[in-house]
Image (cartoon, rainbow, N blue to C red):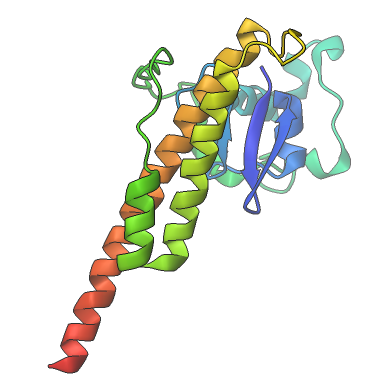
Length: 206
């Protein structure tokens, strides 16, 4: 499984599980891979927690694992004085001493047969009347959602050459829904910031 990660405000990847630590992924880093309905903190992804648990266990009990199965580790991943192997401390608390991983709620599947709800008009209105700085972000994601969906609908070029495979079109439909969710989130942020700004202005006037 290959994961994308939001690091320093940028989407990076894809990374294999073994590359996440070196890439700077922490429990609070948002990650996404094919099949996930939305971006989630790494601490909420069972496969990542399970991988870190196994790595930490191998580092703390080197004699219990066959030599052929011990992964190659770079110097920064060697065990430190606390015995956590250089991994983020919060991961050791997440996986627990007994190796149990908390139960996760099933992810709600995305219905990619229908286009995502367009937030472009709402985003523009909120940008004009509420808070323009975050409103522009909502507009950006709204446009990206529409573009991704339109790309998914295109099957052939003008020269009758097939542009995308069925899997690629499905990926773009999922991406369109992801952008739409981001647009809704930023539209909500814009609305609430606008309300706070108006309340502050009214307070100043009175």
